[in-house]
Amino acid sequence: MQQLNSSNSSLTSPVTAEYLIGSSFLAVCFILGVPANIAVVIYLAGWLKRGSFTPRLMLSLAISDLLTLLFLPVWIWALLHGWVFGLVFCKLLSYVVYLSLYCSILCVMLMSMQRYIQVLHPEKWNKLGRKGQKILLSGMWMLSAVLSCYALVQRTLSLDREGRLQCSLRYRNDVERVSTLIWEIILFVVLFFTLTYFYFHLYQGVNSTAFFSSNSLTKLVTRIVACFFIFWVPIQISNVMIVSALLTGNENLLKSAESGDNITAALTLINSCVNPFLYVFSARALRQHQHGTDNT
Image (spheres, rainbow, N blue to C red):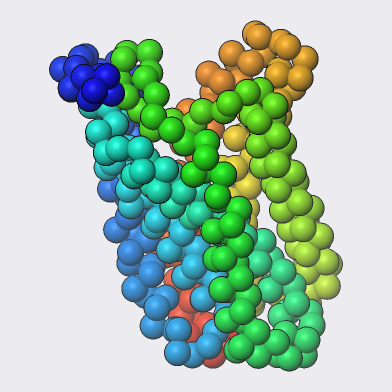
């Protein structure tokens, strides 16, 4: 009953400038990102029967980006009027968002590994076959589903500073918060060194040949990976600052890091909007791949 009263009162309480800016930003991401990702999904879906693995990875990335952006109207409504959709939907929707984000991370990692093996060791990649490729893709989605499970526990309903009910992240104690953030930092560090290793050896192996200059699909994958890092590094820096503040008891550092949380989280949404436009700018590479000049 108390939650119901809070929800009803939140419908009439004034909206802060912070929430208005946040909801406007989410609306722009939805308007730009959802149609663009839908167009990419439709375009890449035509290659499913050809068995090409790189477009399949790009399709998975586009689907995960779409899932990240598709439910933004729900979050916009919550910012403006409070969360009125119940605890179960709060947890399930948060789980879907985490699943799509983890899938994006694993997609980027798999892209770098695949391009390295396929370009420099094509005979090993060919041994994998279509069945092995399907197992990789299925395993990526299943692993993402497992890694996202903690969202079901940590997302709950609580009142914000304006008295609105919100679906927000809540830790039971600082130990849980530090453990969660350290896990996310470790995952990003592993991703960073994995990508660095494969791309260093990829460029080292083919940069001096004429082949690389004509391999437009590899350049497209490189742009996707580069954009991923540009938009994801800030949130990891914020996580490191929060962990350091909690371990040292530095309240000023903690407040400073938390104040930038909304901005760094917003950058990950921008990444989901940018990817489809990378496909548009690299349409030549996709057409070449479609006509068989880049066999995957």
